[in-house]
Length: 278
Image 1 (cartoon, rainbow, N blue to C red):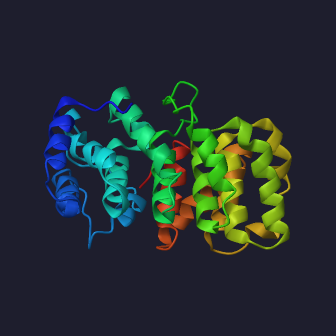
Image 2 (tube, rainbow, N blue to C red):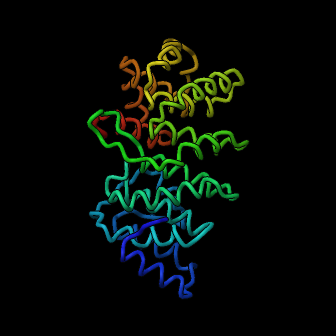
C-alpha cells in the first residue's frame, strides 16, 4: 500500500472530493518554478532532461503535490507528476525521505506496466534517476522496490526502441548486476545490425553497472571506429572507456560540453564520474 505524508493525504482527499486534475500540470509547473526550475509549454520531460537542479531548497512539503497526483491520476497528469518528483528528488532521490521515495517507487513500477507507452517510458526514466546508485562505494544506494527490476526487464523486451532504451538506462543507473549478460548480448546484437542508438544505450548501461565481466566488451572499443563521429553513441563509448579503463577519455567528454546537441549528455557523464562540471 502506498504511504504518503499527511500533507499529501490532505491534497489527495481534496482531489478525491471532486477537484479537477486539469489544474494538476499548471500546479506542478508552478511548484517547480518556485524551486527555480522552469517548465516551458508543459514540457516536463524537457525540464527533466535538462538536468537542472532546484536552486531553492527542497523541503518535505515539496513532495506533497507530486506524490498525491502520482497516486490519484493517470495519463498526462501522472507523467507530469513523475517528472516533477524526479526533478525535485534529484539523483539517487537524495532530496526525498525514504518513505517518499518508496511511495513514488511503487507508482513508478505500476506506470511501467500500463498500456500507455508514454507512461511506461516516463516511469522507467524517473525510476532510473531517483534510484541511481553512486559509483562511489560509500555513496548513496537507494533501496530499489522489489518488483522494479522485473518490470524493467519486461520493458526492455518491448518492441518499441524508446522503451528498450529507457529500460536499459534505468537498469544501468540502478547498477543491476544481473542485467550484465543480457545487456552485453544486446550490445552485440544491436551493433551487428548497426543500430547505433540502441547499442550505445546498452554500452552505457554496462559501463554504469561496471561489472568485471563486461571488461572484454569495453576493451574492444580501444581504437575502434565505433567511437568515431559526434553522435550520442560516440560519447557513450568515451564514457564506457573512462568509467571502465580510466584511459583519459574524459577529455573527449569535456570537449563535448561545447556541442549543444550533446552538452546535457556530457554534463551527466561528468557528474557520474565525479568530475567538476564547468
